Image (cartoon, rainbow, N blue to C red; front, top):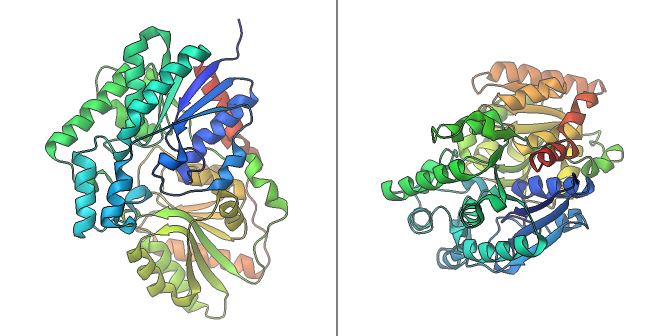
Length: 431
């Protein structure tokens, strides 16, 4: 029997879309192709899409053996972004949402009660039609739908109901659906909320297998129905790509700066205040130390104000950058700030890239991220009530920097957290 399989991955976010959500299947398809599987990806044409970020450099990471199919789409979010202004359209993670601003309340109300489950639902019919053609033409038996946006799962649901046992439908949940941390901001009516619950339950029940990134998300989805068992789920955590860190031996932190960095999107809901209180106190206690903080990505206005209050001109803020430059920013740092929203049983994708950088990590919030950091001897994690303990840890790190003490992680443990390792897990599900 031929162990090499054909698989169709349906993913809304695909290069040139940027952001963390793109990385998962960009990397998994890359390594599935390297394993010899025939991989097809169905996504939306960039000129028709509505992306949070664009990163043209990610196109370079699409494996040459991955067959990419692009479709048209109807994107209402592009229309109302022109009506209310792009800055009033929520970004990834709802990091820019002002719950009191009438324009953003209007956007959220439209989003949640007219376009269910999300504004990308206009892609569904285009993708469904193209998926049917690809499945028939290429004789594909395995279909994977990945979300968010969760409307992507409705494509898989429709395909499964049409083709039944002719395909194996594997659902990949990168994030929760109705339990996502920003769900309360979406201003759902009871009616739209109940529709979301119903759609979520149907996807969970009618899919053949479900992949998600951690035990916490698995528990969330299991709680939605009594008709499925834990055996239906496979945990495939996020990971890092060794190819992204080839520059590691050449890029080093500046010797004259004790630089702490955050790379990515951070919402007020993450409550990271403790870190900046402690770092600000350290800067006051050691006024001659070259302490700096740099954020690269999307940081809410409130957090920018808070960080500036504690650190003044020692803090700087920079727009999102292409992924290669994001990795470069990690490698130039001495400390990497990780902020988790307090959900147990899952590890944010950023954690793995932080780990691969070999730089010291400070996590605000514990859970599985903390376990991975400890496992790799890569730093420490703190509850939001442990400001004094965090301050002492930062002080110790500063002393080591001043005494030229080299920080090093456990690279043997890191090997289990790479995308090639995770792709092998997915390959087993295709059997």
